[in-house]
Length: 187
Image 1: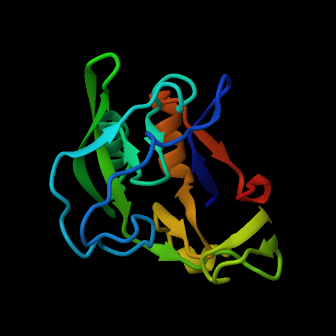
Image 2: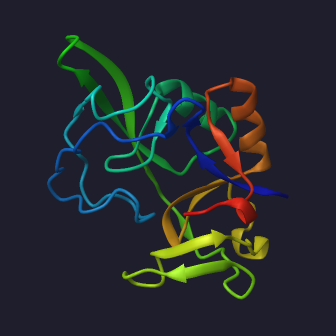
Image 3: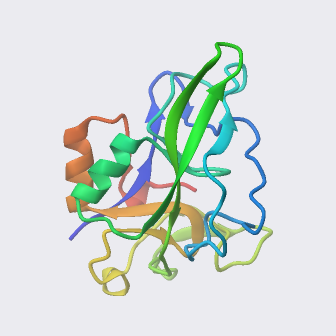
């Protein structure tokens, strides 16, 4: 089984950026630890769309700050069998245009130290090596993954890894997502 790094790029804009500064959710220090959130955030989580700071058209996936996805993406992930997401209603407001769009804030429950560090190319950053590795190329040890459909890579928690079945489903849905082979992923 092959695995892929999940991203959301568009040709005109490069990597998706978050909606300005995310709100502070009391009791939640991080949305990317791969662990259940310690508290349930109040819903909806309100994020502000800053057209002058956010490039391109709205995307189906934003991975930084408070990670969000469209309900359509969530439906496709569930249909592919992904069952390790905590989701919370989020509203993305464009205060200039006076509009709001519904998204889902999400937390991936599950981080796997799946990178084979002896074969991967990387530099350790200034943070703790276990979750802040600066990869130039990743080799995944599939025995550590054990058929998990979607997870965060424990050596770099910003990375979301999916398997072939999920990738194929998302490709058919044509959501503007990008699937990078781990050996070509930089992050």
